[in-house]
Length: 255
Image 1: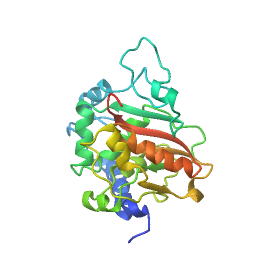
Image 2: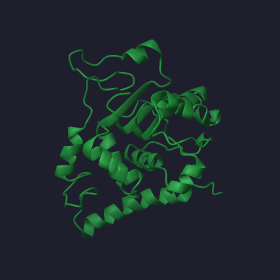
Image 3: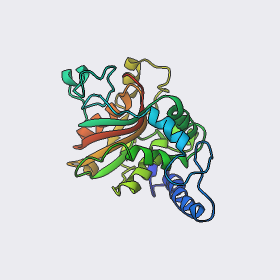
Image 4: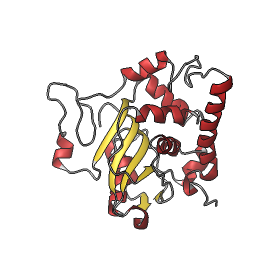
């Protein structure tokens, strides 16, 4: 098994995908007008064309939302505040934020990126994520939610790692994709209830305390649905001594 680059989460292949994407985009911008990675219309600047960007903006989470977990509220009358769940039980992270609702064009983009093999979308999605929020102060490491090696083998890449690597370049923060690992293959979460999802991932991750003790970590994932996966990762990182913040591209409208 290769241990260079990003070890369990794609190794040299994943690193090469993102590096090649940055280099290829730079070269193409010189010789060929850039195109939108979603609809292939010509663009002058930015991550997407105007039409696709407008559809993304339509799903942008701008508040009000829970000041801790980032869950959007149905009504804007109360403003931003801590939700009932976070008020009753402290979450294993300091703060979680998502850039967009997992709807419409955002959902289409994630499906193309995650299941359609369009790995170069990771850079554009990372740019959009970073445009919606600021990184935590004194950030030490960016950490992607890992895939189990069997899932990685079948999919070919870890979409969260591709986004995380691009984010690390954009905000110039170190990436660690070696020391948080998924050690147990779990069932696909798609058809599970919230409680089943929580049980499904319980104890599925491990982290090296030597890498995370007294570190401020930004945990990256593509989509937050019930939050079970990022919460379990956060618990694991917290036990290893980390202070955890979460950033995802999108999230379901309600946990």
